[in-house]
Image 1 (cartoon, rainbow, N blue to C red):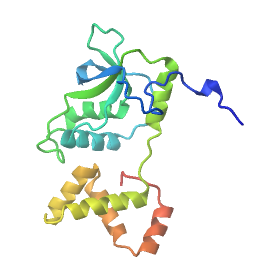
Image 2 (tube, rainbow, N blue to C red):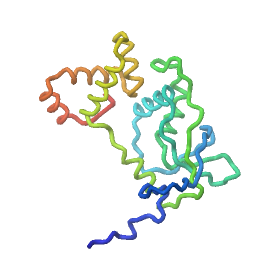
Image 3 (tube, rainbow, N blue to C red):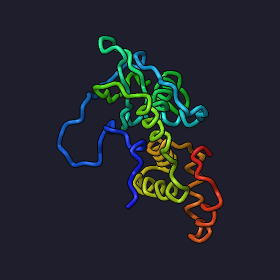
Image 4 (tube, rainbow, N blue to C red):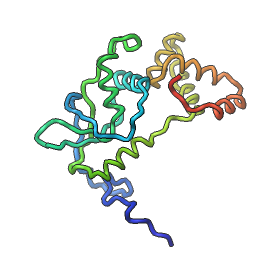
Length: 206
């Protein structure tokens, strides 16, 4: 029987999800002002400005649904280093310029982010694993994007078409152009739509 390489197993894991123990997670969760947040170095260098703006719109409209992970180098100070949440922090910062602009009318800028703070500072190895897992999040396939739009579109029945498009774009964080493209694709016969989905990358930016 082949055994696992111990070097590949973090011990202990930062947050263990392989057991059903009811022991509480060691750490806290806090709302931290943007001015007190700093980004840790991250392997992700190429970040789409359009993607950051879409995420900023979602944060302003629907709030933060996924906490960041960070640590306070000095527990006596409020400054917090973010290990997981690079795009959320960049989007929150960008919201200050976008709020009230065209497409973001009536929205207020993000003032703080929710951060999980483990009791102990993550090691360099744990930080690499935190960021590697965060960077593994993948975009939905084109077929899944189409079905996601279909569900959202049907849920908004009763609105005028412009209101419906605006609501769908707000819910999904996509541009009106992208919403119209996905709607046109949904109108295609299923065999053709499948071939289109296989031939195109799962982009959300067009």
